[in-house]
Structure formats: C-alpha cells, structure tokens
Length: 366
Image (cartoon, rainbow, N blue to C red; front, side, top):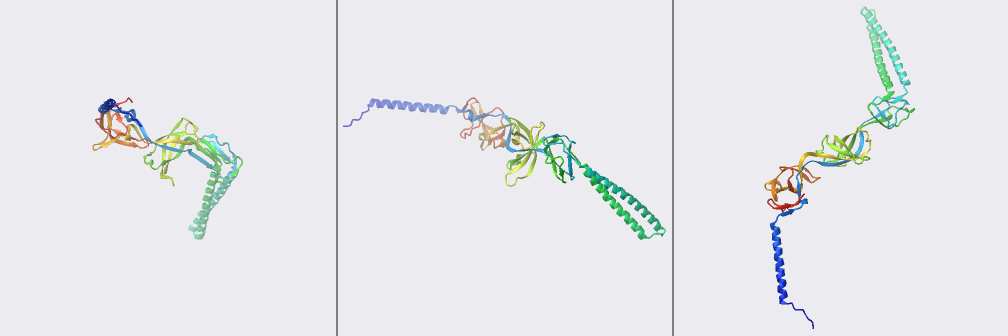
C-alpha cells in the first residue's frame, strides 16, 4: 500500500498569504522605480567642448631630395682631377671635375688662326671689289669682273662667319673642361674615376640638396577633394622613433595613378638639420578639412523630428530639446560639427531612441 502526505489546511493558507505579500511589495517597488528619475550612466552622456579637429588621411612613401643635379660630360676627354667622392659636402662654385684641355685649347688656337687668315682675305677682296667698281665707272672694267669680285667677297665673308661659329664652339668646349657645383649639396653618386677617358654625355656624378625633402604619396580619390595646397602634415621617419617632422602639400597630380584609386600628392619637408636622407621610408597623417575651435558631437547624439535637428540636453534633472545646426562631418571619427549650443553643456550621446524631452533624469558624475 502507498501513502501520500496530506497537506494541512492551515499551512496552505499561510503560504498563500506570504505569496500575496511578496507580489504586493514587488508591484510597489516597480511603481516607485517608474515614478523616479531615469539614471544616466557616464557612457550615455558627454560634455560639449571646443576643439581643433580634422579628417586624417594616412600616407606612406620614401623621401627624395627636391633639388638634384646629374652632371654629364660635355666634351670627350680624360679626367685629370676628381676631388670629390660620394658623401662629400660641396658648396656652390666648388670644382667637381677637371678634364685634360690641351687638345681643346689647341682647337681654339687653330680656329683663331683661320679667322685671322680669312680676315686678311676679306680685306683684300673688299679692295679688289672697290677697284673694279671704280674702273667700271670709267669703262675700264666690265660688269662681269665687278660681279665676280663681289661674289668672291661674299663667299669669304660667309666662310669667316662659319669659322667664328666654330671658334665659339671650341671656346665653349674649353670652358666645359671644368665642371663646378651649381648649388650647395652632397655628392650622392660618382660612377667615374680619375684618369678615365669619357665620351660625350657620359654621366659623371649626382649632387643633391638635402635642405628640403619630398614625399610622393598616394591619396585615395575619395579624399582628394579635401586636399589643398599648403595643408600641414606630420611625418614619422624610420630611425627617428618618437619624433615627427612637419611638412606641407606642395603639388597635387591632376590624374589618378593608372590601375589604382589613388592620386599622387607631393609633400615638402624642411631638413635644415640635415638629419633626413633620400630613400628613407616615412609614414604620416595628412590633416584635411581641418577646423579650429569647433564643437563636435557623436553622430548618435543627433536627433530629428518634424521641427528639425536637435539634441537632448540635461538641464538640471530634466532632458530639454536643444535645436542645433550641423556643419562638417568627420566620418572616420563618427563626429559632426554642431552650432547653436554652448560649451560645457551635458548632452545625451548614446543612441537611446526612447528618450524624449521632459524626462526626469539623474546623472552620475562625469
């Protein structure tokens, strides 16, 4: 035989009374909570502050000297003096290369002698023409004789002009027997050696000016409309940890790079200390659409209704509707510029769509 426990009527009544009391207390507590102010956590709100803000475009590239000069031989001769080597610092006017100019000087002397001889022949031909002209006027010489004398004079004068041009070329070649620096710089390449005989247009050396460097960087086409000349940039260069170098935009390519969605932007950097070298890799931040002293709020704090754009401002212990006008948007930072609100105001920045103006709130200390 199976036995089942029998509940006491007195115990069942007591349990019912307890359950009723608990439910009543819970309802009272819920009613109290609904009637009290809404608690806003620090993550739900923020203070309006004025700040400088910009859209940042990250760039990367290698440094190259803005000014450089590659010297080539303008004569075919032997190098007899080569006083500089790679890495040497040179000043404007310093001797870089001297060629053997003995043959060049001889050519100048020969051209001058030929010109002297032609001058004498021109002078004689001029006298013959004058005499034949005078004789022709008296009928003692024919027109053919006079014309022949004139043609001879013109031919000699043409030869003289040709020799004078050859002399100018020879003197120019003699002047090219020495090459000097056109500006202050550093020797970056020197593929020839002293005693070497070089042909015309042989590359001799390269001089670079390190006082100003340039970075060739690619900027996405979506950002190019925001890029302007003289915009500032901060660059980090490998080998200089913890230090940045200031530069600015100097040139913008009119076309995008083939096969990419980037436009070449050229940035200039002052290198007065001479620390930077060509070929160093650099990264940086190009600040575009830079705005000064503005109030910017998270886009989630911006609300819209039939009356326009507004934010919820904490006024005492109540939310108030504060109309605002929108300005520049920084999508990379999820911020938008606002006007119509003062600095130092507490704004609801969290996406809480159920909040409305007039709601009583309590705010934890920021």
